[in-house]
Length: 160
Length: 160
Image 1 (cartoon, chains in turn green, cyan):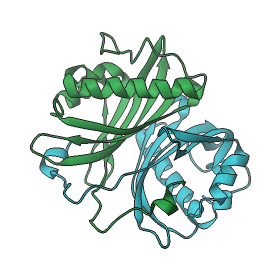
Image 2 (cartoon, rainbow over the protein chains, first blue to last red; image 1 turned 180 degrees about the vertical axis):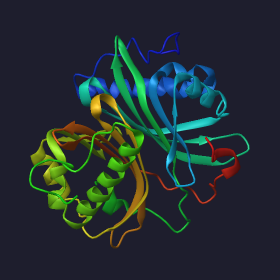
Image 3 (cartoon, chains in turn yellow, red; image 1 turned 180 degrees about the horizontal axis):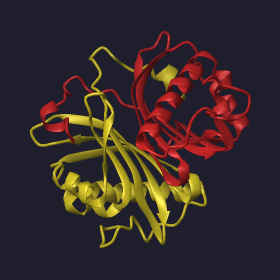
Image 4 (spheres, rainbow over the protein chains, first blue to last red; image 1 turned 60 degrees about the vertical axis):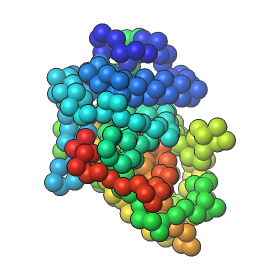
């Protein structure tokens, strides 16, 4: 789905009557969202509406700043300098949610030119609208880097 | 909020008319949820309803297995052996969401006895019910450990 005029996330996306559709919606959404974020950040605001909320930039008390209104959401995206950065999406998980919405959890990493890779987790709520969805909620957190000594006990944790 | 009989996440929790309430709801929820997960996993299913969905245990294609019905949700929690493990919650971020719900994104780590620390990200959707909320969606992903060479360029990424 290319970013189109208007604020529709996807006129092509069906509503999530079953898990399978929901998985597809999450994957299609994420594929297009990060592509547009990477290639044309000036269009990312088209995934949102005026009532959408972005959680970004931690305050001094650790809480995220809420960015609202399409104007400020657009201002945020055109000033984040993620254009052309390298992105790796590790997982996109989706579930059908409340009143026709879809919960999407993404984990991955950004590598900005002249900086090292940084892992992130991002949760979206896609709210239904006529013919598709829009991003109502969007919360982004960067993941602290583990000290070298930390490793995974796959035997113990893999099946949790 | 202690785990009580019935499936209420919190009769004490107000609906999220404003961001501040919503932050409190997310924090109070997370505080009680992880305490009960840690101390009495046999009660964790009381946060859920029969229509709730847990995303856990990746399948061979990388998608998460969906666990549904209170019976299977309870079966999952009593078999995960997280009782008494060390938990650190780094961040709990909440936003008011669709039709009275609350989106919650948590990042933190579990350290199981005889295993190393493992970072996770978990997203919840708290759906409204009479007098409070229940967990409608719950998606958990473990975060891959970074190679030693990876570091953070705080100057570049901190304010994204």
